[in-house]
Image (tube, rainbow, N blue to C red):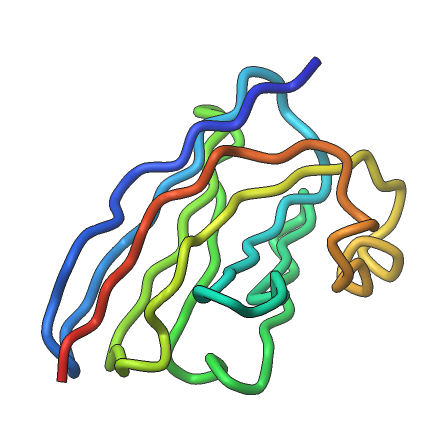
Length: 125
């Protein structure tokens, strides 16, 4: 069982930055970030494969950057130019995948196996 623990959430003003971290108890090749705003479905934000290849949702492209430190089993989500619509609970997810082609297309929640409990991000205008 892989345990994922997110951290780094908080409250910032629009235009600000936050960096989320996700520490995994065991390494998994495919890691992702999802977010869920109140009353809405959980949506995909970004995915990163073990080789460093990433893919991001259009809504965050150019503002959010995903990276991973394999030695620390940790994935990061650097969020810049934050907007009020970025307010949500952010979840880290993981799955075993044998290719970047497969991993980077896991954009549905059902495509990920392990989940963290989330960290709250609140952006004020």
